[in-house]
Length: 283
Image (tube, rainbow, N blue to C red; front, side, top):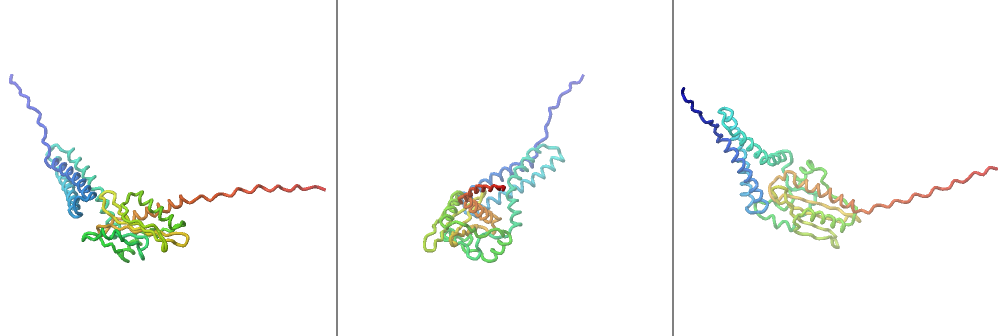
């Protein structure tokens, strides 16, 4: 009787394309995180930091292409690696989701970067103008009537805040809201005689990348009441993707809410006691 030798089970090899797709996806995720940290903490100038970010996005795109190629190879020759392909797709989706959202915003919103409640006489950047002197920063001068027209079409609700409180109270409320947001206050000037105009200049940051956007606020008396005008402008880039308008709108809402909540409630008058009806005396 012939002796039968058992052949050990040979597993299919792992697709090298699947491995490359996964490794590139992981690399792109790490590079995106590093580029965000570089921008937020200012380790490099803006241009090389952004080059790192867009290079990471390019790696994510290449990883997707390799993932599709690996999927086709696995389908044809039965090699392993589908788990690595799916992991690469998941990581790339997380990396590209926010940039894809920004791309949609770029196509949907007007290409402006300077938003104000008073386009005719916007609050000026005075202390902040010294931070806008390099070649790659936007000018401290207001963008002009073209920007005002684009703003009016896209954000018609951004208007001067009119408050039924004295100018000193309006200034205090506004400064408290600025500090609560943890914006970096560069200059603050309370309203003093004779003009009694208060000014606040601060630096805000975008949520993820931490791009610096400058804010100037002017608080003016309006008889016994007050008016608050706000300006928010990106220090870099010609389009802000709606970040400045969102900041101004939220600050307007919070100022109105804070002032309304601080108003003393009007005491209700006690109802008058009912008059006693005179009895009719029959004769």
